Image 1 (cartoon, rainbow, N blue to C red):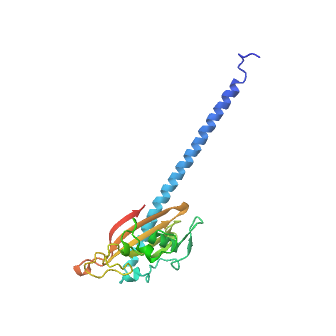
Image 2: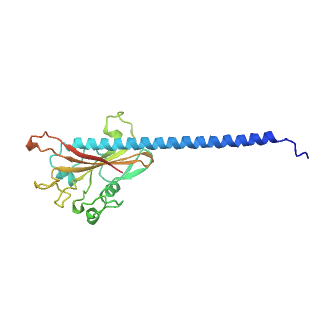
Image 3: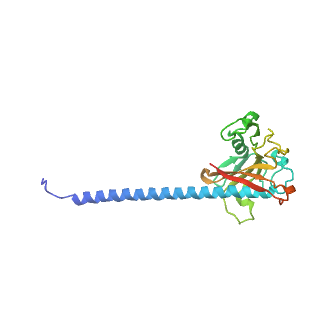
Amino acid sequence: MDVRSEDGTALLVALMAMLLMTALGIALVLTTSSETMIASHFRNSAEGLYAADAVLERALDDLLAVADWNQLLNGAVQSSFVDGPPSGARALADGSSIDLLQVLALATCDKSVPCSSGDMDAVTTKRPWGANNPRWQLYAYGMLRDMMPPGAVNSPYYVVAMVGDDPSENDGNPLQDGSSEDNPGAGVLAMRAEAFGPGGAHKVIEAIVARPDESAGAPAGVRMLSWREVR
């Protein structure tokens, strides 16, 4: 055997080149898939935020027709945008589902089961107001596309809006709006909007709204005092 023979060198080079091209191809596919996934998550996140804001705006419109906000705080009055009783499972567009009572419990006491009075009054990082912690009530809920005329919105998001007593209240009764002049939460309402979408997408917005003082000449309506995305 002649050790100086170059027989098979071309085959070896071809195999090495093929392995290199295969590795480059796999890297390109993975990069493309990752970028597609990142873009999809970004799109879902942005759409979810807009969906939560949309149901918040819709709920604000319905608040204009409610003269007594105590009816909101005790759950006696709901928005006209509801898809049934305020309980039970709701199917999402991707085949998954949410349970409205579980959504309510997670917002109220950060548990997936119904909250006790002690749970709702507990002082936590998220709810540091004790007896004045908001006790959320389901106010508006349904598929976002059902909020508008047929064909106006093609969205897979399910949206929920809740109302609760403003935590700046000092009366210790979160089911009733403050009435005394020295109560900073009198005529003020807390709102929470959530949007649920494909792939576990979930966005939350909280806002504080108030009635203008009409006795002081302010126009009738509802004024938004604060708005924030909950992360």
